[in-house]
Image (tube, rainbow, N blue to C red):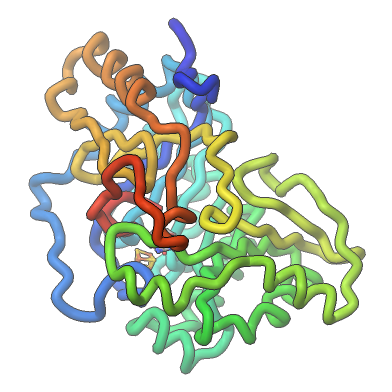
Length: 333
Ligand code: SAM
Ligand code: SF4
């Protein structure tokens, strides 16, 4: 079976699977506070349909799976999907991205089902600011989730921290210290202009050069290292003698598309070759046919563009394709 290599020679081994567009938070960079319209439940792929898509992916060389959303843990019975993925041939990593609110009570159960590790979103260590960014929920629950994930062995634990100008940039030092003192892997992420609110993005976008400036100001000596799960899109560092690491994911200021190895499956069954552009292929008509599902994966690669153009948007230049109107929660971040 030919591997999933696209027109630019990029081999695809990673599938991100979104299981819902719903969420129990309303993070300001992801969703509006009020009026969010969610998909009718009957449009969602069932877990067995997702597994059918993933079986094809596995035959074509996908080895890593990430479950995401929306908030994946608001969908009941996620362990059923995890155990199905864990049985796929060649699988070598199953991870989950979560806001953590519902993780602590089920961390062991998810580990037992076959989940290897989690990314937990944590943009602030200040409870009042948490309410401002996430608009719902409690910081304490997220911190409990980090502990529960460590106890359950869902490691290495990555903490996703979207840096926002004028909102949490003054916490870079606290997050760096966390990576120094605890075996946690902080991922600073640039705010991306995905499918909404250009103005909010323009006023809060912060290039991640600021993180290295802050580390320098604090006198930290840094070693550039491989990430705890190998080399992904993030540029990784360890503060000398640190127990954890920190990484910079800077899709806007320094895109990493030349190494992109991922495809995305949305919760309503669309295969998306690139997070940023509108192009997607619906898998629902291919369910039940191995050949059609395989050819859909190859078609997704054929239409995958060389890169996104978030930087062009920032510079006010014209773009070569049409950007998606889906929000991050509707794609699967
Ligand atoms: N609800 C889960 C969570 O928050 O971890 C999983 C889905 S969320 C869409 C996945 C990741 O995307 C989160 O770490 C979130 O911070 C990030 N994200 C959402 N919108 C973003 C944006 N506009 N720019 C950069 N990252 C974003
Ligand atoms: Fe929900 Fe995650 Fe989006 Fe926040 S980033 S609103 S937790 S989907």
